[in-house]
Length: 256
Ligand SMILES: [Zn+2]
Image 1 (cartoon, rainbow, N blue to C red):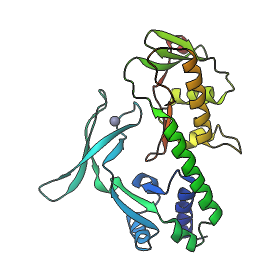
Image 2: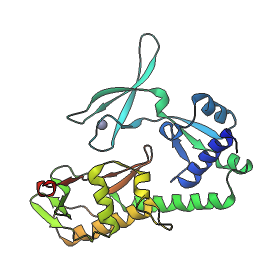
Image 3: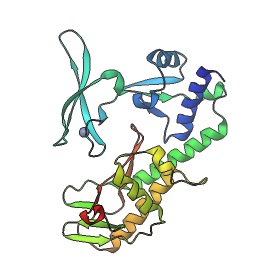
């Protein structure tokens, strides 16, 4: 298979494997600008425009999605500007407009070119539906204030206001293993969650099971003021990273 075929194959995989057929500049880092233009001409990639928000890469406190503004300098150079609200690493940042481009992968053309079979398309459709359902069910954690997960003496607690509740997660459980990964890195690239997968599970299965477990356990504590059906672990389509909100920290006892 030629290098070029491999790249189209990769696009086909992104379309079949992704939650939808929309791809962002960051997903196409394996293509040069000339290659992207070539695929646009062949209508493999359908250019949709520039995003009005971006995932900030400057702060380390989790994936922060912020609105961007386009600016034009007197010399005609156009850039995008955003403000990251992170108190330690935030501020005003500029990025190239090109980095905000996004496209739809043209499944029909890939099928005609025999890079994508009917079966793969069906599976992509089914997955898309599944994700939509789970998105509808689970809401993002929007509460500001005093909440986090705490890893203490190899147990994971949910801290909310003045309460520390032991989630009683078995060390062999998916939820424990996944939350443990977030103690080292948050957000977490999809490939690191793949290490928890068996032949029959995908990262999205582990995430879904973890969200269900956490919601069930936390609801059982009957804390007042806790929203229901929260996506504690949430996928960011642009970066393809998973973020945990609220965050997990080590307690001091754990570090000793
Ligand atoms: Zn940021």
